[in-house]
Length: 81
Image (cartoon, rainbow, N blue to C red):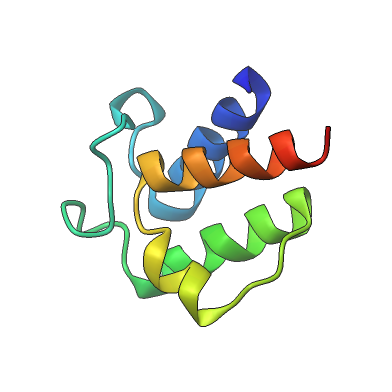
């Protein structure tokens, strides 16, 4: 799980230009102007490629924060065990 969260933080930081040290459970599209719709699509696309999940409108809409993305990726990883 540590790898997943590290990769997630690095991806969010790279796509949004938010300082990686400022990314926490409260970081989301709604409270960071740097995390705009284009950055969000980049984040989802990178994560989808890396963790092999299908991009659906539900995924795009619902996974709009570090916390939600982290929980989703952790659940995917647990399903594969």
